[in-house]
Length: 561
Image 1 (cartoon, rainbow, N blue to C red):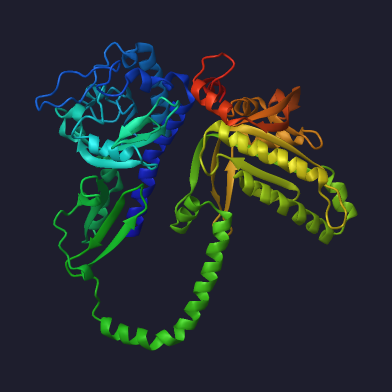
Image 2 (spheres, rainbow, N blue to C red):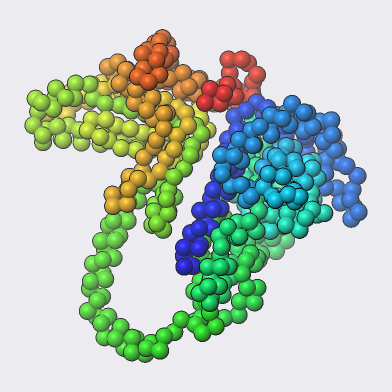
């Protein structure tokens, strides 16, 4: 029961935090966010947005963003539409209660401003007091913000009393605050912490109504009807710059505050959650020691010698199975499968490649089954090496078909994933040109690439397989089937991602309109090769990122998606 409850909380928190990754992707892709840190500026520096008068404690906590870009009605409306869609897709009504972006660690846009949709009337959450909140100068928040800046993980703090809602209904006064950093979009975007410059744009922030999460879990009822006591806690480890050691703090989240049971009278389970250590303890005043314990101990000792050999064999078999699964599944998916959880993830922009061997059916008819298997093994063994080199994920091989992805399962920006897949495809074509099997057979292939949103997950339990689904995958297969011998055909979306690559210039040739099943006429391209840009040119690209040229910019890509 403790394990099941812990798994429920882990899954619920994962779903609640997923919008942070989506929001971060949009910040990095849309021009409307590109220069916000420069417009807000470093606190107290000339040219930066000034602070409002200090509060009653003499602390400067909020910037005066009235009249700035943060108060621009058109920008506020665009963010509200974007955040509303992200929040709706999360399907965490009543739990995910607010989304924010904080360029230069200053809250600029948030949604909803007045949240009436997640609470029963007349209760609502007024968030207007959060606008302009400088998270690095507010004494009550700056320690958490300073810990978040250098972290690569989501940092959760709380439950905390919300600055903007201290006078709200008690049911909405506190929340968990989850933050993740967003990498800088230009060289000028730097956050200074303890003399160290971090190239960060700022934060994506989510407010989580943990009280509602606890209510939906029915955790209290689950244990009460069984006469059990429980305690749910979170342990934070925060670095203390003065002592140069980590301060450990245990926060009580739910259950009995005075959980004073003897260690033999309860079980303790650690939960798989973000960068904090969550733990649930479950027990009762009488413990779990049965009356027949002594006899059972004697029987266990007697049978231990007989069972030890069988146990060793089982351990070896389990290790072999684990090693095999580790090769087949991504680490995060493997952890969820081992816990009996469903593994499904949504990716906003990923790139998929398909290839097959031209004339494979005729070749199979002329060759023996052993020769066919030998040919496929020799060729795809070399292709596997290229996949490893370019850090793409091999999804599967079916007969002569080969499939890889970029940006799945390891998330990255759209142009980066497309670049990895395209470089892999180019090198695979070059391999096929010179490849000969040990029997002297030549292999001719064709390839197709498409980019866009998809869903990835693990199918099956007996022989679990990590795979991807969606129209993006289907159209990648159709790019391959309508391609030409020894050529790589891609869609408009992939072409535009490759055009925006920060490190390579791709030689791409327009093919024109191609009849594609289920899509009609599609404009497609052939990828002929790639040249790496000079380091100087790559730096220049970073400096000009955020261009408003009508022919550039990731905002147009997302409009298409």
